[in-house]
Image 1 (tube, rainbow, N blue to C red):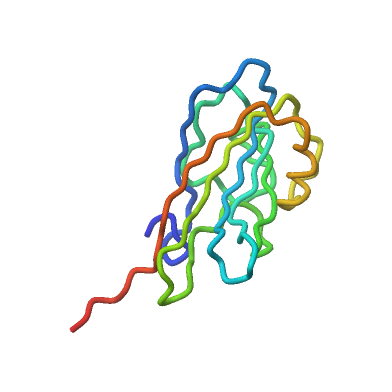
Image 2: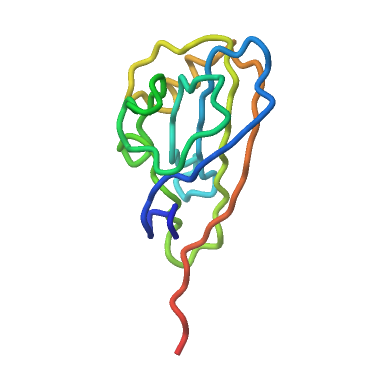
Length: 146
């Protein structure tokens, strides 16, 4: 529950390895393709992550520019807020899939903090050296039956 919007709604720590030579920055998207809206619900948009970082700490603050991670910028999720918005599938839904996608880029992106998924994808076009994906699932916990 720590990472869900039903709980503390803080971002999880994420770690990676194998960043290719020539990477100038990393970008991160977290999406729920099972959302009822008919298109992915965007939970997190982040970019200009320093390529020498091997991880993001948990509980990244929901601000456009993160002071402790000097180059990190965050955008708007589908809810309209900046930063991470945790899983929150509707009550009674089966578990939803949450895709964390990390992109190694050959450039530092020149888009303003607060940009959205579409802005990020457009800016990344032609600059992706490699990508990786982690998929997790989550369903709202059901109250115990009596």
